[in-house]
Image: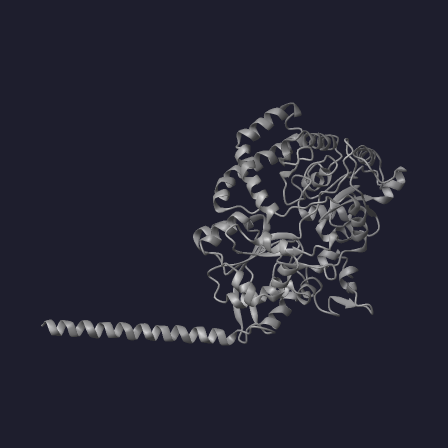
Amino acid sequence: MRSRKLMIIIIAAVLIILAACSNKEAGSDVNEEKVANFNKTGFPVVNKPITIEFMTGKSPLTSDDYNQVLVWKEYEKMTNIHIDWGLVPNEGLAEKRNISLATGKYPEVLYSAGVPNADILKYGEQGIFLELSDLIDEHMPNLKRLFEEYPEIKMGLTFPDGKIYSLPTIYSPDYTSILVVNRPWIKEDWLEQLGMDIPQTTDEFYNYLKKVKETDLNGDGSNNEIPFGSTTIATLLYYLNGSFGVGNRGIRHSFLDMDPETNELRFYRISDRYKELLQYVNKLYEEGLIEQNIYSIEEMQFQATGSEGLYGSSVTSNPESRWGIEGEYVGMEPLTGPHGDKMHAYIGSPLSHTGSFIITDKNKHPEATARWMDYFYSDEGARLFFMGLKDKTYKEDENGELEYVDEITNNPDGKTIQQAQSEYFTWLGGGYPGIVKKDYFKSLPSSLEATEKLKPYLIDEVWSTFIYTQEEGKKLLPLETDIAKYANEMSDKFITGTISFEQWDEYVKEIKKLGLDEYMKIQNAAYERYKNS
C-alpha cells in the first residue's frame, strides 16, 4: 500500500516537472519570437506589427484622432508600431491618470500625461514605472548623447535614489525663443493713434491700457476694445514678476525664488514686493483694464476675440500664430517697476518636463517602446515631429532652411497657422516628450524679434523643478497642497477685490500656520541637493 502511494507521488511529481518544462519551453519560444521580431537599430523597429497602449494628454488645439494625423501615420509606417493613443483632455487628465494608477488599470505608456515628480518616484519605487537606465544605455543612443552633452538634464531626471523613471521634454539650451515661452505684445497701430511710445514702465503701461479703454480705437462705436486679455491671469503675473523683483528663478517655481537681500531661498508669495504686484494688478482689474472674464475664458473664445483684433495687449506665444493677425502687434521689453526692477523672469529651464514619457510594468515591449521614443531625441525625429514631411508640410530652400508650406502659413480656408498645423502635428499645447530645436520648431520672425527685446533682461539663473526623496515627498504633499491652494485662491481674491489688502497680514499669518516652516525646510534640503548636484 505504501509503495503504491509512493509511486503515485513520484508520477505526480514527474508530471508537474514535465508541465513546468513545457511551460518554460513555451515561454522561451514566445520570448525568442519577440527577440527575433525586434531590431536593435534602424527601421522598422519591429518586423511584425505590434500595438502599444498609451494614455495621452490632449490639448484642445490638437486633433481628436492622432492616428489620422500625418506625422503619426508616417511614423507607424516607419516603425511597424501602432499606438492606441488613449486620448484624455488635459482638463480631466490628472483625475483619470490618478484613478487608473490607483486601480491598477493603467496603460503600457503614459505620454504627455503630466505626471508629477512625487508620483514618478512613488510608482517608480513600487516597480509600476520601469527604471529606465538600462533601456537608455542599450536602446536610446540619441537621449544618451544628450545626457553626455548636457549633464544637467540627466541630473534633473535622476531621483535621490539614483534612478531614472521617466523621459523628458528638452528645450535646446541655445534656443532662447522657446525657453521664453510667452512674450508680452502690444498693438502698434493703437499706440500710433494714441501718440504713445511702447510702454517702458508699469505706470506707462497703465496709462496705455486706460487710454485703450477710453478711446474707440477701431472706430466701430461699440467701445469693445479690451486693454489686456489672455487665457489666464497667470501670464500677466509671470510677466510682471520681473518688474517687482520676485519669481527671479523662472517659471518652474511659482512660489519660490532667491531673496536678493539675504541670498536665501524665499517663499515670495508673502513678500512685500509680491503684495505690491497684486495691488498693481488689482488696480488694472478693478478699472476694467483686464478682460473681466479672464478667470473663466476658454481657449477658443480667446482665439476668437484675438482674431478680431480687439486686444490692446496680451502675454501669449504670438498673435500671428494664435489669431492669424500679422504685423499689428509688436513685442515689449520688461517693464521697469516702482523700485527700478527690470528683468524678464518668465522663462523656463531646458529640462521643460520630467514626466513626459513613462513606461509601466504592463509594457510587453519595453525595448521597442524605448526605441520608438528615442527617435524624437534625434535631429531627424525632431524634424519629423515639428516639420512633418518634405514637400507635404515643409519646403527647403537652397540654404537648407525649412519653412512650412503655404497651406499652413497662408491657409486657403482662412485657418490660423495653429488650426492648419493641427491636421499634421500633435505638439500644439505642449507637454510632448522629445527635443525642441530651433531648426525645426520654427519661431516666426516676429517671435524672434520680440525675444531679442527680452534677451538683455533675462534672469541669470533658471531653476529646474526640484526633486524630493520619498520621505520628503510624503511630508511635502499635504503641505504644498494646502499652501499652494490657499496662496492661489487669495491671490485671485486680492486681484478681483473680493477681499481687501487690509487683510494681507492675516493672509501671511495663515500661510505660516499651514506649515510654511516645515515646507521651507524640505525645499531648502532639495535646493541644496540641486545646487550641489
